[in-house]
Length: 338
Image 1: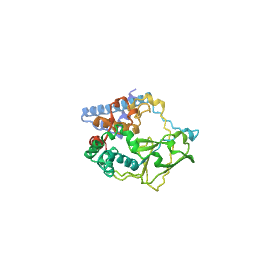
Image 2: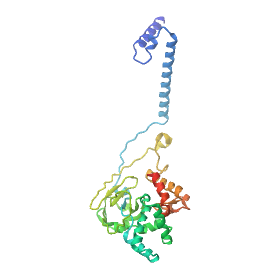
Image 3: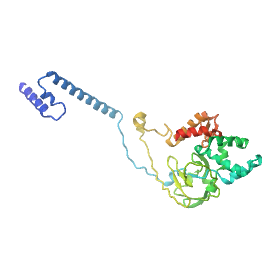
């Protein structure tokens, strides 16, 4: 037994003498002061204990909630089974000159100003689309001058003054067959103004070809920040845009990507998985406009016309649409959000 003990001691001393592990060599070379060797022994033992604790804790967490990675390729029986995205087509021309000329004629009959003067003042309607592009004082004065001729339902009034989808879309072809654009698209207010939004997505299985009206005959020029193309194309779930100038042709190739989370992820806390299931939270594309709406209502006690208050939650029952009298407040909110 003594021989085995001596052999073990000799082997241990040789290991401490020649090992490259940090700190272990000091247990051999420090001889004069025993308390130093005791300190290094306790220091190394603490490090080994801590490392053992971390490894065991990580192992137990993995065994309790294992990481599951599953890769599969989704197969679709046919392209018809996939819904076509709700494409939005927005024109840089926000208001119809023809309709505003008729409105200016109506204003001239009830007021001493001429039709040309009213058309010049109506350029301040740009405040509904670009609050920072107009004078808040001049916009408020126009709102007061319009008085009863400007209804409380700002959303409906601006939709009436917007270019119609019939004038914006010259032709529509679904899967190579000519279709009625009025049946496919509907004029809908959005953050980009009043846009033609695709409604009948169930009728499209392969391709949608559109011919847009690039004429400027009905353009009503208003102050706007920077330069904008004639048209912009938007897709749901995408924060970007595709722009299109007159005379240009653009082909958008849509590739469906089906992402499916493993049901076992529901057992994990949200802080660990770092993602939401669809029923747990709103998508970022829907969340950002709602945040803008809440901040505007809190600051100005009104809602921009792009939001449909009839479909909003009960907290907006007593909220009306913002008009030009709120331009100063909207400019403040816009400055904070930009």
